[in-house]
Amino acid sequence: DLYNFRHIGPDTKVHGVIGNPIGHSKSPHLYNAAFKSAGFNGIYLPLLVDSVANFLNTYSSPDFVGYSYTIPHKEAGLKCCDEIDPIAKAIGAVSCMIRKPSDGKLIGYNVDYLGAIGAIEEALGGLNGSSNGAISPLAGKLFVVIGAGGAGKALAYGGKEKGARVVVANRTYGYEDKAKELAGKVGGKAITLAELDDFHPEDGMILANTTSVGMKPKTDATPVSKNALSHYSLVFDAIYTPKWTRLLLEAQETGAKVVFGTEMFINQAFVQFERFTGLPAPKQLIRDTLAKNT
Ligand code: ATR
Image (cartoon, rainbow, N blue to C red; front, side, top):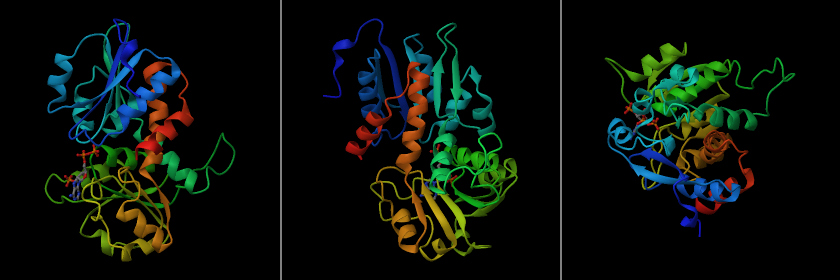
């Protein structure tokens, strides 16, 4: 009943999530339900895309107004924007794209880091101090980001913005290494994923997984050994299917706070909904729809 298409007509605004694979995405359920609840004449599709550039060139109608980006297209999406928001530019990846009604230009944004960092800050007890000069609970913390793709870049950027000391751990290491490049950008340090198990310069570190390791159907895989988790006070996993990855289960067993990928997903969905529609997000409906579908 989420897909009530009776409203579709010449004024319907088309949106979608661009990715590959795309079958796991909960975004179509979520946005179609939210559009309906807000009385917004829009539709949101799962878009299995090989080439972002070819897709955008083919579907250039002014009614194709908004896209979300997921694995592996967040960086390719950046290259296809007519205009790039400064934060997306600094991160080097887009998480959503909006067509300007006035001239049809595509503007790229990145709201990933707001969603994830906000959820981590909340779990750490919220901001300290007054709202003006508020200090993030991430300030001064050692913040280890696993992965150096689009989501890894957003988290590393967010960590730096909040005053954390960032460490990027990625699978590939060596010549033209992505982790080194990203660590350089955020004034941090790069290590290999293989080194992560023995990396514990201090206790109370914060860990964020942005790779697909642990995503269905490889649910028993984990990017870091359980032993190493005892050095972390909080573990975040960007994966939201399943909600409990092996990483989060083991983190909880080890005594760390856990932050679910669903929190990042929900926070960035609120922001994207408002960008897509210009209307306030139906927050409870978005939470309920996601809870029903994960
Ligand atoms: P996204 O845009 O969602 O971040 P991405 O740009 O494709 O997706 O990045 C995926 C990240 O997950 C990369 O850091 C990738 O590591 P490589 O740079 O070595 O490719 C990491 N990744 C994906 N599958 C992995 C696996 N099986 N083991 C370890 N890391 C993996």
